[in-house]
Image (cartoon, rainbow, N blue to C red; front, side):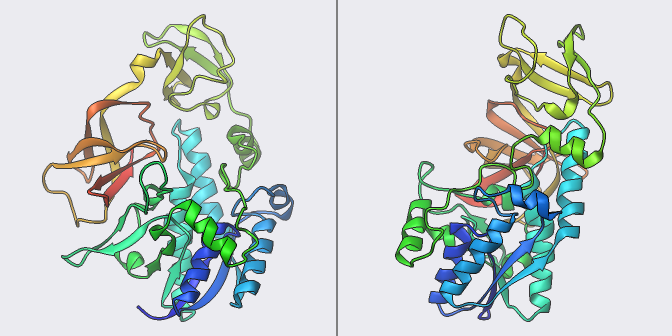
Length: 359
């Protein structure tokens, strides 16, 4: 791999340390922040450590100055709107729960940033993700979970399952060899001003966490109320609109039942939300589509794996097998709670990322 690397700098400690580590290793490092916010007023709201707002540019520029590397802001507004925001809105309106970080990684951070970086003469891009790019004996590249055990690791491979072999061949992830506490220590020792900057916990373009409000502002229309129903179809009450809910949700239903009730299913075709008790939320079989494989070129026979069905889900033993039309049937050894349409199911074996797709 060549020596000129463009580092996607979000203004946070992880990408800042990634730039620092690569420069220390002798790479020619160029820092880039992707301008993805849609208007300046919205960006000004974000002041809490996210990767989309004006504070990200301020912090990234300061770090680049300390490291003595060139720094630029590249405009990816159009790509972010079409590939992330529009997708986010469509999925919620269709009764599914999207993962915008996966879409951003796939279509903006790699497809767009990498293409532009290579055109500008870079040999690779680098990010602050906690993951390890590895090459297997057969020549394929994949990701391995980051350093540390489940308690100390900040592994982010779940959101990166859709990267292609060519993208992996032009990607560096130096933070994957460290735990979060080690990264903060390195930043402090290097004198980087973001060493103690808090992580962003919300979706970057919805900093207040009000997804439904964002969707209504984005579309210019209010979500249509409908009925809560039980599994037998009996009406239990009225909901505020399907974009306000996700599978497994208990809080914020806006109605009391005298017992704990959870969202089991969202039916956009009838504008109904099915409520049930907690036990009904468990399932052991999951159909996964739009599957992309990484460690293997394809799946021809059943394979034992560990699988995650959301970012903070502890990977559980399962079997994946071909299900026709490019789909995969994922069968867990034990039932899992709140399998959610629209989220990703990601498969691992011995710490290596096998592949993943959409539930």
